[in-house]
Structure formats: structure tokens, C-alpha cells
Length: 291
Image (cartoon, rainbow, N blue to C red; front, top):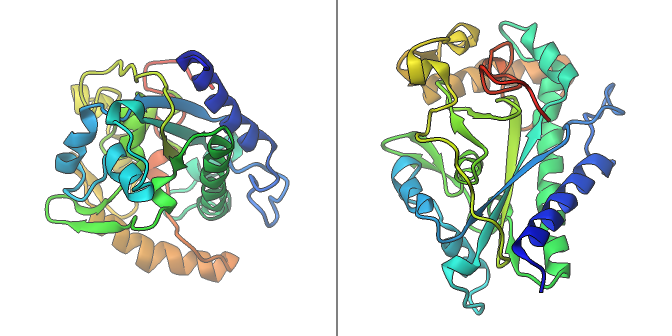
């Protein structure tokens, strides 16, 4: 039987190989030869970690724990929570995409839009390929965000929420903490996307080298920075935090029509201006950028 360390290395290698070799990891269109995502970063967490129960308070009462989604997906497979693990990955934006978007001050750059649309299509493919690879190794695995029953939900406390928040899962796996604009600030910054799977494989418990949800954000920690406030064209970020309704209205009413008219692109879109042109774009502020 493989050791926990061997299992972790296997999982990392599967994800890295898919991201770096797949012909689907591209921006398409005039940028068809450019990758959507840079080298991934991977983290793990045990399925019985207490942090998952806190997400029913800080995300939504409907948020799944790893045992919740595993039982829904494999009702005949009785597995103890401590025998489950979560694998979470970060997909960093490539430098050209970040540079393009950092130059904008009202609407997203085309590379950014394409990474959000086609890059997330690839992320779904990665989820499926990861599940298949783990299944081929003899495990039962599920990618919650593309599983039956996953949805976004209304939240009285947090306006919009999710039954499985990839950002919070990444946080649980020790990959980062939240910033003023609600983005997760990771070792490779905030200009990223996330994905995850739950599997009945023994993997390392996360080492979360932070004390709060906000340790990596200079503004929330020490009252410094706040550049993302200035970067938001919708006025949806303030010293009080991120106004999700203002943000969504701007995306729906300004960004989405613009993207369709100018580039003929449709799909789930974001502007990403608060993730670029900021000190946490590619690193934790005060620390060196590392891939």
C-alpha cells in the first residue's frame, strides 16, 4: 500500500501533467497557442477536519462537508470521515493575462475574459480527468462543483453563496487566506482559479500556517494597502469589504454586454480588475513570488 507521502506526490503529478500537457489548456481565438493557466499549486486536507463544519457558518448553511458530498455520490460506500481527503489546486493566470488586465481600469482585457470562459471549461475537464485518474487507481472520487446537486444559493448573511466554495476549500487545504475583495491570496497571488476533488485516499493533513481567514491581506491585518478599492470600477469594494450585489450588477449590466459586443464571447464572465494591478496579484504581499 502506498504511503501518504507517495499518494500526495501521485496526486500532484496527475494534476501537473494534465495542466502542463493538455491541448485544452489554451485561451483560444487569436491566443490559441497560449496556455490559460500556469503551473498549478496543490494542497490537501483530511475529510474530518473541523474547519469544514465552520463553512456552514461562514459560507452557507447549505455548504457541503467532504463526508456530505461523498455520501451523496457513493451512498453504498461507507467511509469514515477520517478516511476521506480533499485535493485542492490553484491555477495561476499566465503573466501576459495579468499584465494585460493590470493595464485596464474599467473593463477586462480579452485574455482575462478568455481565461475565465475557456480556462474554466478546462478546469472542469481537469476535475473530470482527476476523478478518472483516481478511479483508475482504485479509489472513489468526486469533483463537487460538477456533481449532481451542486448549485449557488442565496444567503441571508452573505448574499450569494455556494454548496461547495472552491476558495474556502483551498483555504482549508492551507493554500491561502482571504483579502478585502473576497479573493483568496495564495503563494502565487490572487489572480488564480481553483478546483478540487474529494477522494477516499489517505493524504496529508493541511498545514495551515495562518491564524485567521485574513492573514495574507495587509489591509485586513494592519489597515495598510487597499489598492483593490481603487481598482474596482463598480465601487463594489470599500473599507467595509466587498459588495457582491454591486459587483454582480456591474458584471451583468456592463461587462457582459461589452464582451459580447466587442469579442462575440459569452459565458460566465468577471472583470478581475481587483485581482490584477494590486500587490497581491502574484504573491503574498511582503513575500517573494514563487511558482
